Image (cartoon, rainbow, N blue to C red; front, side, top):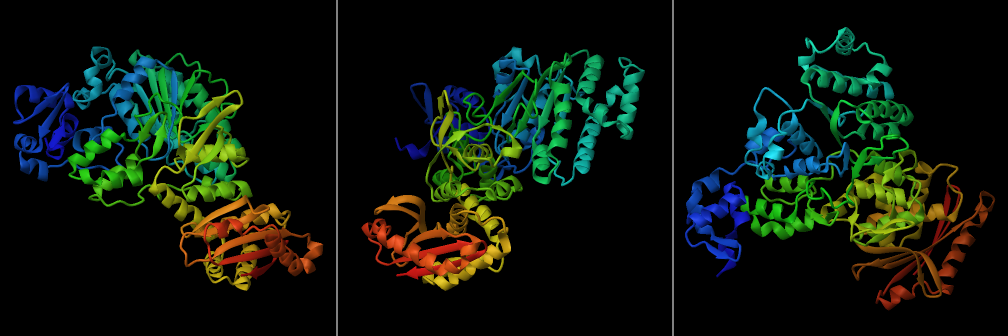
Length: 616
């Protein structure tokens, strides 16, 4: 049997847009000529599948692969839909009062929230038709009985992206107002008293006080429960977006105070709440936001439970590639978009995979520019030389080992490696290499970039940000100086960078200058292996660059810093740095690796002044 001429039941199901169970039934009925049962599985000839559905239908009537559409109704009924409805089953079975899912952006959080709304919300339309052919419906009457019976509150804060608190607060008020308007059944409800009707009227006019707005979730659940005779469901998408904006633009305490009261009112000890689900990128520290909310269950990328519901699994991507006639593209898809580890599950980036099929199988870095990265840039400004060194290694495909702190306190997000790397993990810029180690001292993990797309992000967004900080093509001039071995050009480029970008208070220690230069040369990581603070010869070099191509020179740099009073000694100090390279034999590692030409740089700093000496 030539395996390439046959499809599995799951592949045939994807191609025909049927359930796998239905395809198995068709096999038993003899609908596929030449189908072979091997154990409990079937192998179905491709020609039989084409004959069953009609070649024209397969070629001309493929469902569109929607990108950016978060409407469950539209995607599940009009587009290719990867069935994630068993998330509903698990939420019902777990019976948690409030669940927070943290996942990177564009990993299906908003679509999941919309799916939950469509399933649980009571409406005039019979919405069971959107689930009758999905996996949740096959789970039985226990789950079917809960479909379409709850009043649902849905809030999304994804567009709360303003630079001032008053604008952000006004936007949050409008989100609340719109949700109240959506529940028009309350306006003339006989179950509500005069005070409630007055609150509704003033919500419509926008004349409530901040204190009254902070009780909006509690009041709406109470009113809906009174009108419908059933507790309400609260769904909140991207709850942390306004909090991130507050941190970035200086109104963190204002937004935290308001959001704490709003969320606690709706989710903590609320007798009118059936259950709540929140999504976001980060888990904001309980002490800062969820104080006293002891019924909150947090599910992160570290957890196995729910791990396959956000993002695509390998089997799901293979089914898509078969359906869209791109089965030979799996290796390319895997190289570009796979590699995420959620719990024990290998996960593909769903935004990028759907973009790949929507673009007729052209691989690109689709995820890179789907939102701003202000927090990333904020952290980059605070990096120590050690963390800069590790980020440089990451860009070259190396693993790093870090302690993880999954409860983010935004004002301290750049305090150390544990918070920085934990945020990069939560945000999708890093992933786990293996299961984390849980110890009495905390959680420790090996981290890496998941795939080619994210390495592209590091080499464009991160390095691009560095370029925007410098003026006059500083990065370009540094690259040129290093290629040419031109010490004076390098001295001028670093000097220009320091004059335009470095505060007069920054020149405090050698470590600062070390980290600065390490960041500036990181753009050369495609041509050099860049290492710092490693042992070689009889000591530890500051910075070593091993060429990936024989035509390029090897580079060893030694940094020295002198106080402002010693600026006249810069030339002598730079020469002493060269002498240290020779004395400690820092070039030995490059020589042992067969690098023929090695350029030594002695670089001395004082405040915003720099002098560079070279030796070849």
